Length: 143
Image (cartoon, rainbow, N blue to C red; front, side, top):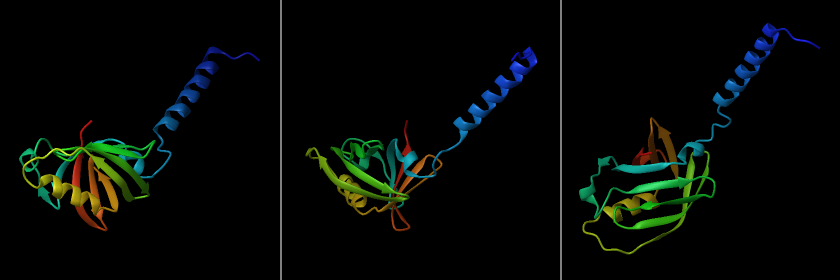
């Protein structure tokens, strides 16, 4: 079977259009697919945080969806552990942490808040960790 140049062009254009549409489709609406990122803390219970609230730096969490690992820092110490999601629900497994001493109670406030969360929401490059419907921690995407 022979094709004219115009027919070949049309066939290629159609194939390319189909491939483009497939790559733009979102295969899942599971919110955990967007959790897989690095997030820097902005607020605890609605109060804006600064580096002065913590001993060394602003807390950061990095989620790895493939293996269910979470790591980062609590403002003073490095931490790592596991997490699970089901839809918009989230739970954290045991966390391990270094044990450096830092001034203030920012780290304790952050860890206490983190231990209370059971859900999450992502909107406009912000991650909200929730207890029920109440926003407990707010993060911004940093990478």
